[in-house]
Image (cartoon, rainbow, N blue to C red):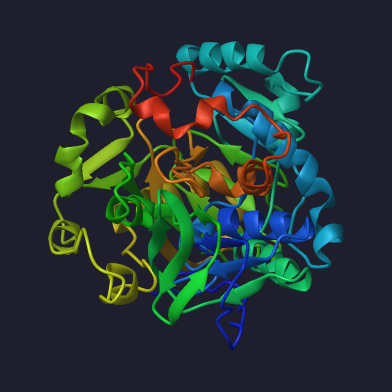
Length: 443
């Protein structure tokens, strides 16, 4: 069964010869960066090897959440929540955004204590976040048979439609003058005297002085060909959607057993609350030591396996010339097989917990490859070794909700404006300057 179909975005017919900035990657991060830059009067080319939002940006859960984020992401996510609230009006298009609230369930004492500790990170920020239990929790999750000890309730959090959002943002960028090329891979950057001079695409060269690499799961491969070391791996997440349900919950819910959010069509998006699949590939060994703290922390939720992915990545070119056909052209859209075991378990758990789902059917299932870093927070950074090159990747499954603010921060860095938040935590050199690189252990 193929993955979800994002709103189609037609390609421009002609590749521009010169722009100020080329953005590589048409997911929500790249589209948001292009939109923010174009709105400031910067000439932009958004280049996508496949289709806009063809990969993880249309395959994620659709959550717009502050709850349980790494503390280093909280200021940027607060900015994102402010953007989401007025985004449809700015775009002139629907993203499906609803401030519905999210409930993070605690199944035992340990979870309850972790969630309560996490609340300290948002104290004084006027988020409305609080722990709930008993009748208040049951009121949020009407007609449920779960045995949650308590839950973290985030009333400011919400949801949007992944198949709508990035295409809407990309089209709004075009409204403001951005050029959009789909089915057009950027093969490599053109560097002269240590500075960006342009990019080589499969359709020809484009002159520019700035490049934003927002290639998601492909970013490490592209960066490596440019001589930039970017520690990033891929994690597979499996998702399903249901037919419309008459009386399901309005709030989104995360629990150990499943995660669920209402869709604009009345159905639900459902996934496992904790299971992710990690295909063992050559990079698993190249980057194993850097990712070891993350693996130790998350070992309960990761399922390691050998699969066909090993041969795919082992046979991929890792360096090439601008005249070569690249891996980005050999694979236009990553469309991995979902895990049937994860689907069955999450669906059974969700139906047991929420009787309203008894009348629903699974309409579609899919999987996506998430770009992850050793500390599970993104890289949003200039590249010191190549003037004019910026990277925005490694969002570690947190990218959809934070995407509009990440695009704004990228635009701030490219235009050398005062950044909307302090970007220090997201700098690329943290992997090489002796910093302690590991996920936050608070939750």
